[in-house]
Length: 231
Image (cartoon, rainbow, N blue to C red; front, side, top):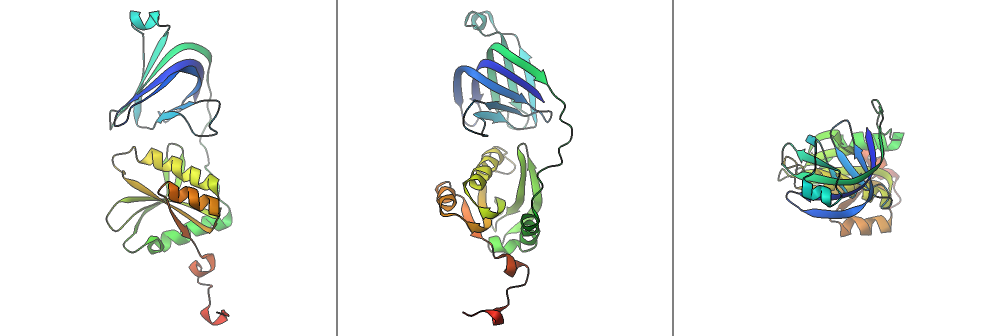
């Protein structure tokens, strides 16, 4: 991974366009070819990014750009969509490369891992006509617990938690933003599934168009015995 702290501006051109004016930012170039642009705020969410597969090219600025103070240009182009991020660098404050090796991935606790397995086996809990694509669908920023398709064939990303809070909704939101940039998956809707979902998390999820699903762990394991109920 290459980490560059630089005074830069960033322009995104594609299905959407955006502009970040000159400021000091962290640029992360990962070995998978992705680029992430971070500020010193906003927690973990990048200001902009380009997911793989993409090509990173470095160019010399034109005379006009040099007069404006630009010393280096990065052009990051997505191979499938041709979307492009142009990073105009005015000054490099830090530049280092680190070999991180192979990451073992996030290890879920026993209940969450079992919930994922059970939901994959009982995918109809998402709704009639849903089908499983795969568990642990990898994205550039981590694995989505379950990728499924609804009755109409549209993609559905599912994030699973024992107790669903706002952090889980934010995590799924990041996955959805990234996955909806992939024309082979888009449009992708989200399902936030948990044994218990906090009211604030439900409100945030529904505001973002994410469906909430409360899972009965005992029933999914076949331990919900009707004769033992009081009502």
